[in-house]
Length: 371
Ligand code: SAH
Ligand code: SF4
Image (cartoon, rainbow, N blue to C red; front, side, top):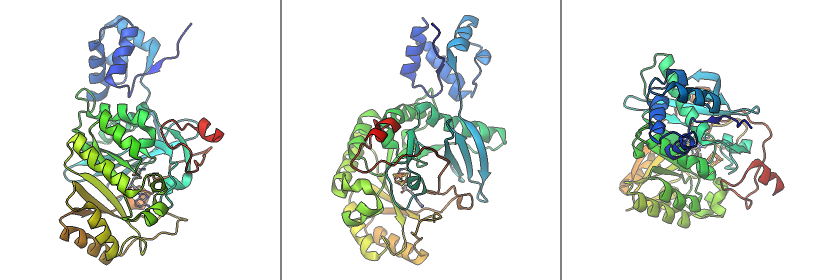
C-alpha cells in the first residue's frame, strides 16, 4: 500500500530523525537535510549532493517540500511588504516583513482567522477557520526569505514575531515545533530573544510555553482594569489581569527573560487617559516589564479610533516617570493594510467560537461546530 508523501518542511529535528529512521537511515540525515532546507534554501532533493542517489530516490517517493503559494504581494511606501499566502481550501493568510535600519522583522500568522473576538481587531472580526500547521508557519518564513532574495533585497529576517493573524497560544501544538525550528542552530538559528510570541492572555498555555520553549513573550494587555479588559479582550473574562500578570512574572523567571513586553493599543477616549496610565504603571512598576504603545490602526467598519499624539505622549510620560521602559510603535505599512491588526487575509467557512467553548489547540473546526 502506498503512503501519502510527508511534507518535511517545518518538521522539527526529532520528527525528521524519526522519518529517516523509518527509511532505515541514520539520524544525522536529519541534520544534512535541515542544512539544505534552512541554511541553503534548497528544496529539490536532486540538488542535495551529500545524500546518496538511493536516498534521494526514497525522498522523491515518500517526501515533499511544499511551500505555501503566494497569491499577492504588496509593498508599502515605507518598504513594508505584505504577502497574501494561500493555504488551500480558498483560505489566505497574511505575512508581513518590516525592514528597519538594524533589523528585519517578519510578522507571521498562526491561524486562519482568530476565535478570540477582540472587538477592535480585523482578524477577530473574521472569526476562526483553522489552525496552521508548523509547516505552514515555517513556510511563511521560507517564502519571505526566498522572495526577499529573489527581488535582490539585501534585508535579512532577524526577528520573527507571532503578531499576524491568529492567537498563537490557541495553536500550541504547532507553535512549539515552529518556535523550536526558528531557534534551532540547524534551522533558522535565531536567538530566542528574537522570536516573540504575542498572546491575548491564555494563561494555562503561558505556563505550558515556559516548559516547552524560552522564546520572548508579549502580552496584548490594552487595559489596566478588568472591566475594560473584559470588553476589549474577551478572554480576560476567563483569565483576569491579576492571574495573567502572575503567569507573566512566572514566565520571566522560568525562562530567565529580561522583560515581558506589554502591548497597549491607544484607543481614543477608551483607554488613553492619564488615570489609565497610572493604573497601568501600578500594575507593572518594579516588574520585568516593558511597554509598547501601539497607536490604533483604524479598520473599516469598526468604530474605534486612534488616540491623539498628545494623549499618547502624556500616557508614555506617566510610564517613564515610573521607570517603565516604554516605546511608541510607529505604524508601518498602513497604506496597504499591513499594520498591526489590519490583517484580514481571506477566509471562507468561518466559524465563531463563543466564549466558554474551547479555545485551546484542541478546537478544530469540527469540534467547534459540534459545540
Ligand atoms: N492574537 C495575538 C497576536 C496577533 S495580534 C494577540 O492578540 O496578541 C498582534 C497585535 O496587534 C496585538 O497586540 C493586537 O492587540 C494588535 N492589534 C489588533 N488590532 C489592531 C489594530 N487595529 N491596531 C493596532 N493594533 C492592533
Ligand atoms: Fe485574535 Fe489577537 Fe485579534 Fe484578539 S487581537 S482577535 S487575539 S488576533
